[in-house]
Image (cartoon, rainbow, N blue to C red; front, side, top):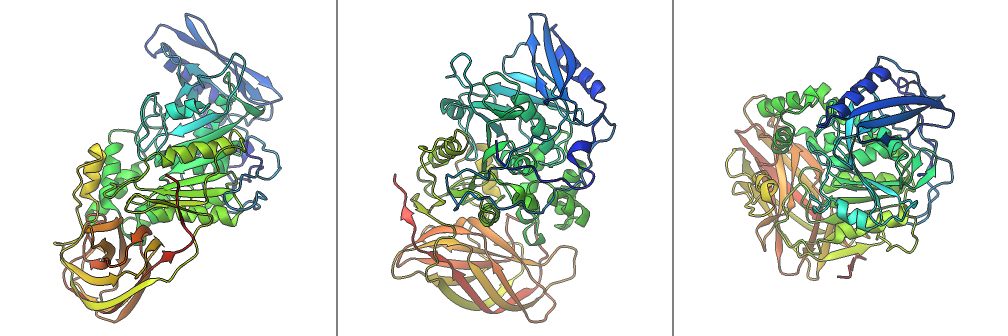
Length: 615
């Protein structure tokens, strides 16, 4: 249980007045699904009313699957309305936690968690399975849940529970022996650590019904609230209070975003470990109003043929045609995922992000981290060589993610003060060496600077990428096609490294004065900036930054932060800034003409006070 009270919801989404479809009709749907799940069993559904909250007492026989639901007298009445995608999440921050410094093991504030009123619990076991259940959500959608109790529980004992969400387009994990992908944990490691595990098929995916809305607080977020109600009724579940299970959340990508969304809605979450998640889909998918067309196409492929909100396919078609997106569709994406609602989260959060992630770059985690730190929320951040990307350098200790994640859960979900403390910040360089610091950002050192000038031809050929990758399976082969690589058509600025070793951590800053022209057209005018490790010829972190330019023949100045990096700068070696006209990582801009840079200044951030992590 998080010990905060839930923040009020905006008008039209108050806790006691949520819209929902006819609940009786939805119960019939649930019973039918259970009955048709591959066996002659049927589902009997019984409802009753209690003044204490929402519970479920499933009973089964060899011929039927029985579901009992209990509804609070304070629960909202049924209605035929459903929430709309335009509903918003409040952005006003809650009072700062009194938990102490970032990374502290202290408990959050002492206010009591009041679970939100939700639709009465209704669930049915899937015939022939001991782990699969259908759980009815608020609007009649049926969410397929997969339950894996802790294997070490004695009779009558309880354990805390971890909810683990899957990636986009995927059903919930059910393989108790599988290794997590994209840096995520797996069922086996969590159960071995003494937790019950719940995975689920997000709406629209797997065996769940409904339409996928990209981790919308009004849909996927409320689905998880219903799952929490259901978890509270299961045997072997540790409770902090009635209808308040002791729970943490893990999961990568889409399964990371839902953690932040849920914790902003529901005070029952005790700790989060979002892996390669995002802050805002506008800054991650459309940086500088420039779409990541390759990733957009791949994500559409993953969800092809599945019920996904039509905005996704429509915006992808627009991106392919004009490299732009309708403002209304951009606003739709902005309402998906956490965004400003991160300021409402008060539970301890370990943010894990990939240094080579080209979809959700390091800046997405840093933005969330800064919000948590400002609000006094216990938080830490770990960077690893992975994520939505290909690690083309030495990854180092590949167990860092899972080890740190379980240590975080043990400390804040089990409340085990003897659990290994997770450093406030940990990163890894291109040599696979990990470094830790007690704060983020670490103390700044002297920046490395360079300058140059020249002219860039705006042609499509010779741009950045694709990279050559032989690892990573199907994902690795695809990601290689949209990964930046050294360009042959580029404005190059060599940067000499310091006489002593330096660790570059953070966002380089680029300033240039320019003028240029290009023929008229629909596509936006852009250039892109990347850093080349001249020792390996690789783009540092596989990162490239789009930069909007005005090509009207007049002089202009641009100053932009580049994507964040983590790099060990050795004396005697060099790094080269490349400004390029095109890249496989983003939608193609307008071409034709030239840009003349009368001055280019690049500043690379160095840090001090970081300690090599124990191997």
